[in-house]
Length: 163
Image (cartoon, rainbow, N blue to C red; front, side):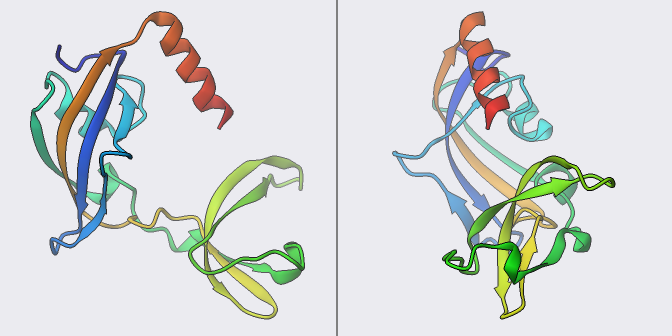
């Protein structure tokens, strides 16, 4: 079977920085899974995987705008310390969910931000992906491909909408 739309694909991967340093990798217990043709991974990465079969190895380098985005300095914000519960055990590197407000002060959703620094009066958060601004190289091995039924595709879409 080849990778095509509506296939659930499991990948073993290594992600490398421009200098060759490994940023992330999978192991047998944490393969990367995605539903092909549904925008769950960057479009250029998805296009590079189309048509491959189990056992194929794919190597692709993506520019920042095609991977995790450009680094946005406006994504770094200082939030008053008293916006967090006093007993919150927060350390740099943690991810926290932040409620987002529109221009009228109404809650318009939430987003995850990484804790960068903790000071007595403020906590600095970063909305950028940790690899934003980096040209990255994916070394991938296709481990499993399974065609999903229309019901399974719909169920997966509903689950991802809820996250």
